[in-house]
Image (cartoon, rainbow, N blue to C red):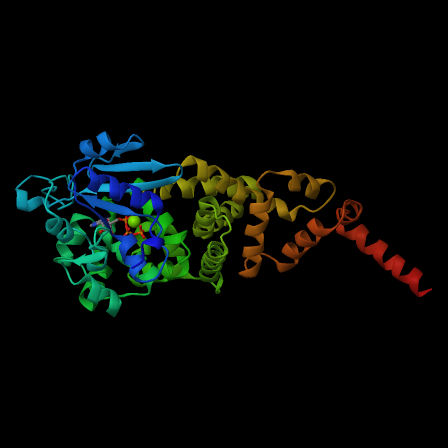
Length: 413
Ligand code: ATP
Ligand code: MG
């Protein structure tokens, strides 16, 4: 494993901790991804220094987390996460686990490096890289599992999932990202234990959802979540729409949206959670709006009310921050406005700050067979046309057709 692939800032932290007499290793996803020849997303460091010691050493350091006290060392936009070696809670006899649910509440009993390895989730995440002699320390057979491409849990799966149900989502995420396999017994357990996710704070599920869907392997994550019946516990309304699946529309819409996002990530283009969650929740919004229209509500208020309702029920599962739900609702509410093509309305719609995202959304709907492809094509042509031609576009369809026919006759004559 070459040091050249390790971030300079991570190296700085490692060297500094060692210089001050502490043990310090690179651990977790950084080591795992480097051994697989992939670029790590971030670098985690494990040390025997306690959080207060770490803070005393680095000026640019902040301590975070309650359940899990960590040091974040900031270098501009890069954050190096430094965690103190921990032992499993029960070995220390501390009441860190909720008596009823088995959920971990506190996880701050410090331990040795070996104890630290054993309380991690998967063997491939429990490898330590020692910069002193460039060696990889492996207490759990993680190197072997990396070679075989398997995710093996460190301990009894049922206990581990009960302690922290997010580990099921992590299993899905790593399987999706790395193409690794999961043991059959663990797979069948996951299919049964999704309900445990209901006990996880919605804010944590939001973070996890971003990692699942915005890291370039959204399609794989989605298909696995559906396969293990976990998707239902993250997006209940969307899931029930998918199971009803009228025509072929809902499935291809979410699928195409995720495919788009994955492609953009692969090209290093920006992706926004507002658009993505807008896609994931559109089908419930659309159905609710359709119902409202059936009892006489106008198109735009129907979408607006449906959007508000869907968000209200969704945030009890996944805490979507306002900075994303506001643009999301705008993207939805602009959809019926694309149908109004007369007069100055199209020009005005183009001025809307959310026009571009809403137009991309329309194109996706059309590609999935839910909106009229002619409508999406019209808007594409409208944007590509120069200003004079746009005025022509914006004439009511009847008048435009008459004029065209006339000029055709003129040309023929
Ligand atoms: P990536 O950063 O690529 O998403 P990662 O494996 O580094 O993957 P992090 O969330 O950064 O994941 O966590 C760093 C390490 O901390 C993990 O590799 C794992 O060893 C340990 N860890 C994280 N979350 C848990 C958990 N819920 N249970 C047990 N160990 C965990
Ligand atoms: Mg990491």
